[in-house]
Amino acid sequence: MNIGDKVRMVHGREEGIISRFLPGNQVEIEIEDGFRIPVLRQEVVVVSPMEAQRLAKPPVKEEPRSRSSAASTPSRATGVFAQKGIYLAFVPINDREFTVHVINNTDWLLPFTFTASHEGRYTGLGAGVLSPRASQKMTDLLIKDFESWPTFDLQALFHKEGSFEAKEPFQKRLKCRAQSFYKRKQQVPVLLKEAYVYQLDEEGGDSPKAQAPLSAQELREKMLTAEPTPAPATKGGGVKSVVDLHIEKIRPDYARLSKAEILEAQLLVFEQQLEQAIASGMDEITFIHGVGNGVLRAELHRRLSRHQNVDFFKDAQKEKFGYGATLVKIK
Image 1 (cartoon, rainbow, N blue to C red):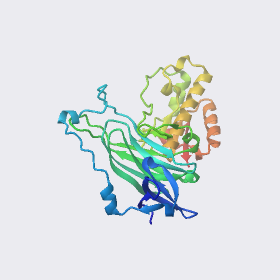
Image 2 (cartoon, helix red, strand yellow):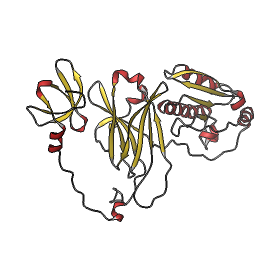
Image 3 (cartoon, rainbow, N blue to C red):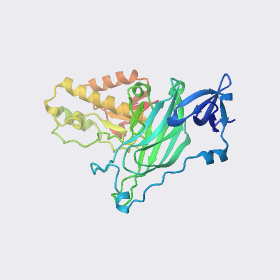
Image 4 (cartoon, rainbow, N blue to C red):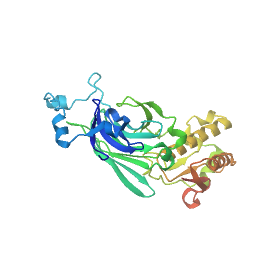
């Protein structure tokens, strides 16, 4: 009897796979839907490969479909093709353990790979093709190891039968952080269970905003701040690696805001972008806050000095960003 063997109950109808050995002459068996139960060894018998093949249910024969119906989507009632809905779900098995699932709640067929990285080493956790409205279990994680969980990386292509408009390959990196993880509990699409869920293809809110005229003070700050070359967010899956906190970049209606409201809007963007960078597994992020009277810079540095996921921060390179920018190194 080994881990991975298929077994069935001696005094029951349940079947499952041995996932691990437990103290007290017990084994843990994973049955349907990923549930795990402890059972005494003498209460289970190993199912031989030949017996398993004989007892296997015959596959359900699908009615042949015409090419036009095959190319149609599951959203037949509305005729709308679901473009978004790729999730990573952490499903609690008990009070010690999670199972990790990749979920495709779109109408796309998704060929994918799923890897984990930790301290420069990569591990392949799964690969295959996810059908529309389907999920696949990737790995197990222990809650006690939360701080050392790896950074997860999902790469996928978008496909469907028939003609369609090509879409760029998808890639998203995710690093779980305790302060946001436990706020994500909800019912998981497709699995329909309570779990901790990340939607990987969420929009980042980086759409351009209308430019407004500069005041004399803002023009001075612009002159002292070199215009940075936009840096690609290769690790953050769409999260910016350089964030400009000048108010005209954030709020097109800034002219009617008070000084307190301007500072509040800038700090809100700072907090949001920092948390997104941390959750996406980025190593560093740069905030351009300008020179001004130094209030925004002082408040940013105060908050960064107390943040548990910030390794260190410093003034960014003057040659690249001019005056008034802070580089944040993430743990």
